[in-house]
Amino acid sequence: MDKDSPCIVVACDGSEQSLSAAKLASDLAEATGQPLKLLTVYPYAKSSVLVVAGVEPGKIDAEREKHGQEVFDAARQVLSGQVDLREEILLNGDPAHEIIEYMHNHPGAHLVLGRRGFSAVRTLLLGSVSEKVVRHATGPVTVVGQ
Image (tube, rainbow, N blue to C red):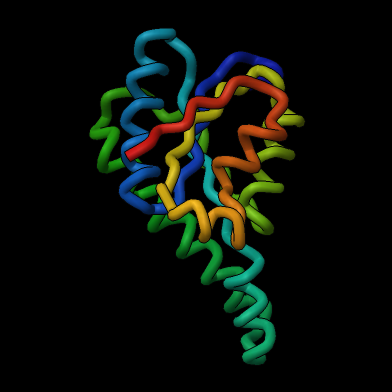
């Protein structure tokens, strides 16, 4: 599929909020006839801990794949075959940065993601993936709240 083709992409992390986003994304894909893609990011923070602990690169890759499979399995359960999944995308790095880059490189994508609902103080101190994506995304973004 052409990267410029319209599609619905749901950013998943396994949280209840991302599962709600997956359900809404599925409804959007079904209503618009656009393909649905799942996207997750294995955070550098997790792989950095494994590197510092001396874990072999092959085992880190396996852990990343395991993370992706668990997140995608949870999302597929929520979708329960309602729509046909076109692709599962597993990225590695800072979640907000990787999602923004994906949107930049796929201008036809409409992103759907969940919002964790952290307190204002925690969001100010740590930032929020959904807030960063909304500020910097180059295409349409739907944020599913609590």
